[in-house]
Length: 375
Ligand code: ZN
Image 1 (spheres, rainbow, N blue to C red):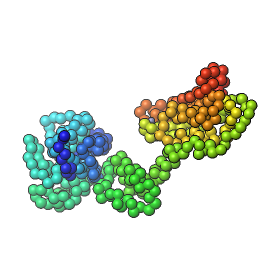
Image 2 (image 1 turned 30 degrees about the horizontal axis):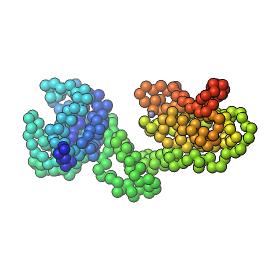
Image 3 (image 1 turned 30 degrees about the vertical axis):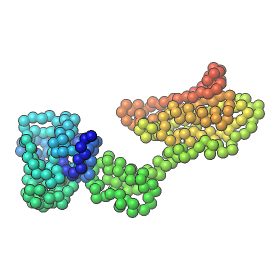
Image 4 (image 1 turned 135 degrees about the vertical axis):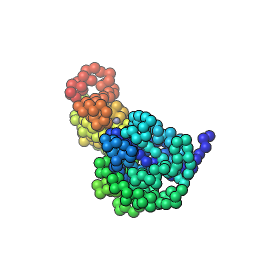
C-alpha cells in the first residue's frame, strides 16, 4: 500500500519566453492533467523583461498557480521538469537562456528547506517582481515562512522598483475558483439540475474559461437543459411513441418506404453531434404503422449517446418487433462532427450504415428494390 500523504498547498511559477503564447497556457494545461496535483487557482499573465538577459532576450510571460498536491517537494519538482521536457525545454548551463517552459516551486506549505542547488521557498519570492506579483494574486495572505511578511506585502515592496512587470492582455489564463465554490452557485436563480450544472461549470474552468463572465453565467443551466433534450431517448420507449398507431391492412403487400427522415444524435466516443437522414422500409404482413411514427421511433434511439451502426440496428429491430413484417431495411447516412471538427477534418465525408431483417436480408430482389429507392 502506498503511503497516503495529506494534500498540501503549493505555489508554482510558470514562465516562458519561446512561443510563450502557446507554451505558457499549455504548461498549465499539462499541470491540470497530472495525477496527484489539483490546480486551484491561476493568476493573471504578467509580461516582463528577462532578468540577466541581453537586450535581445525575448520578454517573459509568467503566471502563478496554486495547487494542492500529495506529492513531496522532490517528486513535485520532477513532475514539473517532466512537463518542461514535454514542451521541448532545452537545458543548458546558461541560467538565463530563453526557454519554452519553466516551472518552479515557490512555496510548499510552510516548508523551509535547502536542497542540492535549489530551495523552498524559492529565493526569488522576495526579490523578483515577476514572481511576487502573480504569487500575491493567488495566495494574497500567505506568510513567507522566513521573513514573516505576507505575499501582498512582499509584492508591494518590490513593485515600486519594478514598473516593467505588467499584466499582459495577450493571453487569458484561467481565473481563480477557490473563492467561488458551489455554495454561491446554489444561490443562482433558476437552478435546474444542480449536479449537472456544477459539472458543466467545472468544465468551463478546466478549459480555461471564466464561468462568471456575462456570456457564460447561465451556460451551465442551458447546457443541462439541452442535454436533457438531446438524451431524452433514455426516458422514452418505442411503445410510448407508437401508442396505438398500428393498423390492420390485410392484403397490403407492397414495400412501404419512408425516405429522408432527419435525425440528430451524439457519438458516445466524443459526445459530439452526428446527424443525417434515415430511410426506413418494410414489407407488411397484415399490419402497417402511421408514417409520422417512424420518425418518432428514429428519435427514441437517436436521442442517446450512440454509434451510428447501433442506432441503425436498433431502429430495424424496433420495426421488426412492433410490426412483425416480412422484412425491414434501414439505411442511415451521417456526418460526424467528431470527424469534421477535429484531427483529420474530412469535412465532406459521411458514413452510411444499413441493417436488413427478414426478406430484406434473404431475398436479393427485395434488397435491391430497397437499395434502388435509397440512392
Ligand atoms: Zn465521435
